[in-house]
Every structure is written in C-alpha cells, then in structure tokens.
Image 1: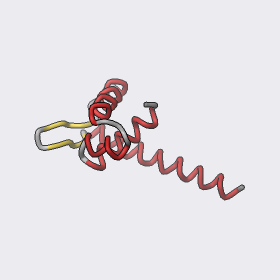
Image 2 (image 1 turned 90 degrees about the vertical axis):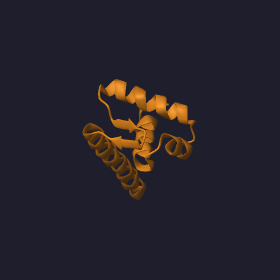
Image 3 (image 1 turned 180 degrees about the horizontal axis):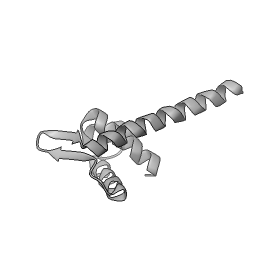
Image 4 (image 1 turned 180 degrees about the vertical axis):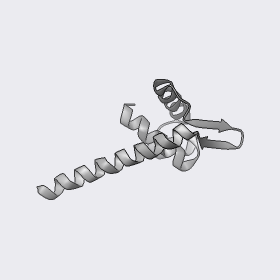
Amino acid sequence: MDRLDTMRLFVRVVETGSFSKAANVEGVVQSTASKQIAALERRLGIQLLRRTSQGLSTTEEGQAYYESVVKLFADFDEAEAAVRQTV
C-alpha cells in the first residue's frame, strides 16, 4: 500500500468511524487497515486516532491531518479536471 492509499484509508476510517467499514470500502482486510494507520502514525510521530471501547475519534492533530488530506485530494481532482478541459 503506497502513501496515497494509506492517506485515502485514513480518510475512510475517519469518515466511517470504523477500521472494518473503511477496510471494506477500500477493499482490504481490517487487520491491514489497522496496521497501515498505525504505521502512518509512527511515520508522522503523532497519534491521529483515539481508540476506545466506544469507538474511534480523531485527536486534534488527526483532525488537522484529515482536513489537509481531504483538501489535497480535492486539489488532485481539480488538477485532473483542469487538464481534461484543455484536451
């Protein structure tokens, strides 16, 4: 799983509130989703998600990262749309 796939998976986890739901949407198993998010947190050196018996929530840093990643994907979509219009 590359960096962009992991970022997309993180967005899905935040949006669904569940590793298993996000994994299902992204076509991976739940354990892979959990391991990829843990690896992302290690790479960034911050905790993105709070895991409790009542579910998941973003940390303050996780919320900021989520918003940045969502904007990044929107910018990608916009760039692709702009290129398609010039062809």
